[in-house]
Length: 320
Image (tube, rainbow, N blue to C red; front, side, top):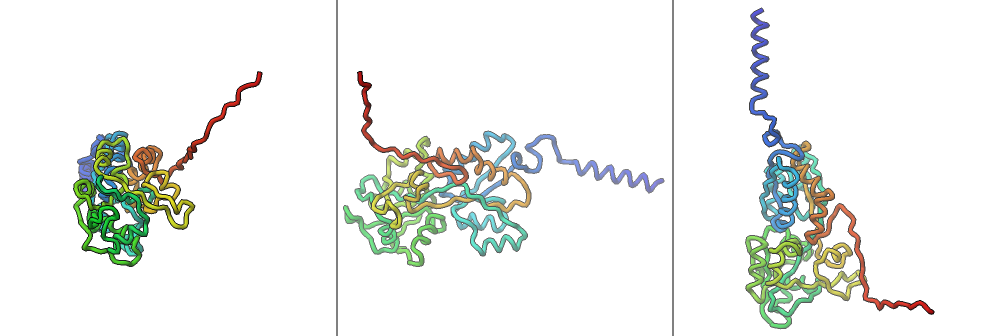
C-alpha cells in the first residue's frame, strides 16, 4: 500500500513539474509556424526586401517575433551550417560541400526560390558614362579598362564587403579571371556603397537592386537622387543584343538584363516551426505581392508583361 502511495505521489510530482512553465499564452509556447520567437540570418544586400516582408508577417501574426541578423553571404551560410540559424535567405543555392555537411548532421535542407533580384551598377550623378556592355564591365573588374570614357578619370570599383554575394557574383562572372584588387574599395554595407558613389565622381558601385527598386520607399528614391543606374547591353545571344537595359522587373523576367540573381530561402528546420511559417508566407501570395511591389520579380507567381507600342489611332466616321 505504501509503495502504491509513493508511486501516486511521484506521478503527481512529475505531472506538476512537466506543466511548470507552460502557459495558455501563445507567445510563451514553443514556436509554431505562426507563433514564438526565432532568429534568422539574411544576406545584407537583401535588407530592404527582407525588412518589408517581415513587417507584413508581423502585422498578420502578432504572436510571432522574427529577429534578423543581416550579414555578408559567407557569414550567413556559416550560421546555417553551424546551426546558429534554422533558416537563411541568400542569393544562391547550397554548394555540394555545404549540402554534404548538413546531410552529415542528419538534416535534409529545404530550398525555396522566393525572388529574382539583380546586381545594379551605379555611378556618380556627374558621370556621363552610363551605357556599357557586360564585356566592358568584366574588363573593368580585371583592370583591362581603368579609366572612364568621358572624363578619363581612374575608375574605383566599390563593393559592400569582400565576403558578400555581390563580390562573389562578380568573381563568378569572371570565370576564373582575377579581379584587379588595386581598383577595389571595400565598404561595410550597401548603404555605404551608395554614399561613397554619391560623393566620388569616379566610383562604380555594385549593390543589390532591392536597395533602389521600390518606388514607394522614400529611402530608395532618395538614393536615386544622388546616383545614376547604368544601362547594360543585352546578352549577345538574344534578340536585344544591340540594346541597353536598366535592372527593371520586366527586363529581369525577359532575360534582357544580364546580371539577374536568384534569391532563396534555405531551411534546416526538422519540424514545422516559425521558420517554416516565414518561408511559406514569403513564397505565398502576400509575400510574392510584396516582392513585386518592391520592384523585383517574384519567383512563385506568374507575372503578366504587357508591351505598349506607339500607334496612330484611326477613327472611321460613320458614313451618312
